[in-house]
View: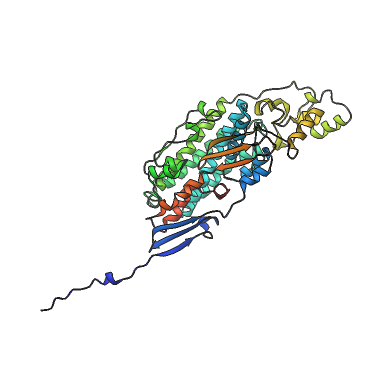
Amino acid sequence: MALTVEKNPEAELDTNSYLLNIGPSHPAMHGVIRIIARLDGERIEKVEDIEIGYLHRAFEKSCEQAGWNNAFPYTDRLNYVSPLINNCGYAMAVEKLLGLTVPERCEYIRVILSEISRITDHLTCIAASAMELGAFTPFIYFMKAREYLYELVEEVTGARLTVSYVRVGGVKADLPDGFLDKVNPAVDRVLDVVEEVGQLLTRNRIFIDRMKDVGAISREAAISYGFTGPLLRACGVGFDVRRSTPYHVYDKLDFDIPVGETGDNYDRYLVRMEEMRQSARIIRQAIEQIPSGAIAVTLDGQPMTGAEMVLAAEKGMTADLPFRMAVVDPTLGGTEKARKDAIKVHQPGVSLPAKEDTYGNIEGLMNHFMLIMDREGIKPPAGEAYAAVEGGNGELGFYVVSDGSGRPMRVRCRPPCFPLMAGLGEMLEGGLMADVIATFGTINMIAGELDR
């Protein structure tokens, strides 16, 4: 009797993996990222490559071609969702090079506006991530909440997104009168929306299934890639630049560093939600502690516009000009002499003079002219400096080198997005094709910061 062996029909099937390009034209890739994934059916076997560089704008070389203060509009366009934090990081690096300590009120102003920006950053990240998973309602709610904060930013800086508010040695102008009274009500309204969205998402069965145990990365792998920010803290590592190397007045403020456990997409969501509450806590403390603005001169007579000051100076009527209040454009309110000492350093070679001096006497006009003249301006001593701040996505660092001239010899940015994108492949491998969008959204990749 002959022995027959039945063949397994499935063993004869020839299954092949295939490559799939995800982006850059895919809407969820924002037109700036290309992921080359090897798929077996719907499962990602391997991420062959993650291609970046579609939005390279030569940020560093552009800064090197401009003056030290002229780089601020370029920093706005790094993480353009929270540009005020970018402004502060670059200013701190140049101030370190100059050996400057900015006035305490200026430090509080920077902290308040940085934390407002951090909340707008997290609102945008969570809103976009939820929308890409099909939850459109949280997107609408968070965009509404973001408007409350953008209105505050616009009142201070005159712009919503590309603010260019910070200066080396200070800020462009003091806070408008009555501004601090508006902050807490706006923050309260934002937190109400955060709690409302939390009720929609945090225990939502569909949202949890899409986020829990998806895109996870180990604590060790995150550290080896150089992760910082919410993604590292979601892995259980409580590293935060504001706490590890405090800058400005963060060491005087009480706040907690939220951490996760598993390093998955759900933990990243929870960390960002709690960070918004902690930012609100920081803002409230800063408002309570901020010192009042210094009064540098005794004001006498009626306020004058800049044009009136110029006309008076042309006629030689300059005796009382230094004691007049300058009435300037609303976006420059707070630059007058009465407030200058509280928001800028006392160095003519670094900070622009008050408008009263620019319009009212030749010394102020010459000082202003020299600081804005091409190849003149601020001239730090030869040397190098590095300063880092806690950005919306993690440690945002600036390394600057000076040769003693009016332009930086070298500017280098440490973008927090770059290490996160380096680890994206490991987070995607083994997961489903549908999880690519969920995981990529939690990274909060901002191409202006990533590609520079």
